[in-house]
Length: 92
Image 1 (cartoon, rainbow, N blue to C red):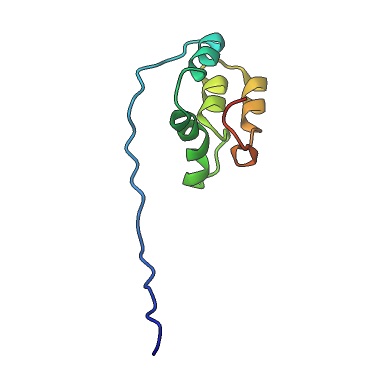
Image 2 (cartoon, rainbow, N blue to C red; image 1 turned 180 degrees about the vertical axis):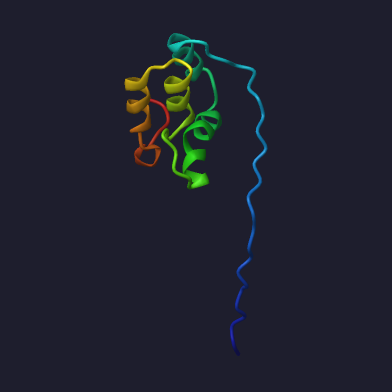
């Protein structure tokens, strides 16, 4: 009696973005809002650059916003150096 081999099933990923309705206009608002939003939102803003596998100056949305909107290059560089894959938790 031979064992039936289960076929590999190929799937594709579809993301649907949903606005939280929350915005930050400065660093204090960013800090306060990050403490209020879901982990799913933080994951989206930190990991989707890795999923795209494209080379960007910034490695996450937070770094991009700090560098381009606030013109805070040092902060942007610091935020770009955060490796989300090395974290065991999103919260401190």
